[in-house]
Amino acid sequence: MAEPQRARIEFDPRFTVAEVPERLFGSFVEHLGRCVYTGIYEPGHATANADGLRQDVLDLISELGPTMVRYPGGNFVSGYRWEDGTGPKEDRPRRLDLAWGTTETNQFGLSEFMKFCRTVGVEPNMAVNLGTRGLQEALDLLEYANHPGGTYWSDLRRSHGDEEPYGIKLWCLGNEMDGPWQIGQKTAHEYGRTADQVARSMRYIEPDLDLVACGSSSRGMPEFGAWEAEVLTQSYESVDYISAHAYYQPRDGDFKSFMASAQDMELFIDGVTATADAVGAKLKSDKKINISFDEWNVWYQNAPTGEREEPWAVAPRQLEDIYSAMDAVVFGSLMITLLRRCDRVTAACLAQLVNVIAPIMTEPDGPAWRQTTFFPFAEASKFGRGKVLRVNADSPSFATEKYGDVTALHSVAVANEDGTYTVFAVNRDLESTLTLEIDLASLGGLADVTCSTLTDDDPNAKNTLEEPTRVAPVANGDITVKDGVAYVELPAMSWNTIRIA
Image (cartoon, rainbow, N blue to C red):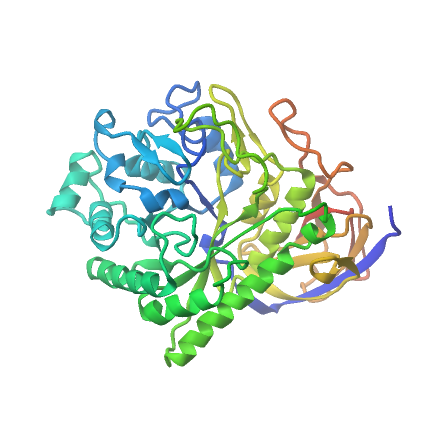
């Protein structure tokens, strides 16, 4: 190991970035692999409740702390007929899902999703199909979901057993519509006009909806920037958000650049913000478009997708990444980035919630357990509420092939609603311990400092079915407080939650 290094941060509760948005801690449930079936929904499971939801999974979701869940996709939504998942289950059709090459049974649909949201206490975020469908189907879905009654679609919902409207406020207008993999791919002009028409029409039914237009599918897409500019030129006054999606993994054994993945996410956010503001300026609008970072995670996209026992299988194992300690630290750094940019990123969705590149894993008829990435999200959701503060930081750097010199310390400070403070800090250096000095002078005499740390001597250590608790945060005893400064030892490659009370 290299020699220990030193870093320092200071912050003042008078200087804030923004209030942490409730929707920043969102997640994502798509009809993909085993996210739904044998994930959150398995009627025959020993823990299943009356709605077929796995109670062991519900308990872990409550511990994880998501505030909002996006549904039903993702790529899946661009070929989805929402009506298929309504009414008596025995009458629901089986359909080919072209997005993922599987068969969808539709035994879990809109009503089941809303019961899930109510059970775990999360806000629903509903995506509409603008791939194979369009304006009329979006309006029908909104009427079915949110209108009280007295019309065809609202009365149909009531006849299906849901007397009260669902009250869904947040809606995604399609998904990744620039992607050549997307069913019904569109040009920026085509999609921008469609999004504007759908948004304006949905507001005839319910004016105060929050609507998300599709941004480019990733910062690496050839049309990134130009796509956002054209889409927002068409729809600026009718939508509230532009979406961003980003996934990260190590490439060619370059783990130092992987540790610095948040550099790319920050550039992504800044680029989308600048583009949106430029469009607003050109249109002479006082309105600000915020970002819905509604897909983000570590995802090993070049890994095998999982078992494909037969073509068009039902709920096969797909995209079931098993995350390492290193993955969890990078994940935590991405979470820090979202908090640091929460003045403009006001909604975000970890993709996904269960089994599919997820913090929670299950086995059919078996147990559920926490992946390594579970812990940074859970701690951020629990302790990251309040106001994000401006942080002045001084940190040593390390060299990366992709991003140049990058600071070892990646951090954010939050003034919590109960008068305490939380610092989330990642030591991105794979070799050196970092002694973090925290100036407590502006915090009104608070000096009780505690820390939990997630790291491992083996960067590839994972939580598995056979060893589900291999990696977890532990209390960090390497803390001293002297002359108004807290000194916290941050191990190499570590995620740290520092509480000041």
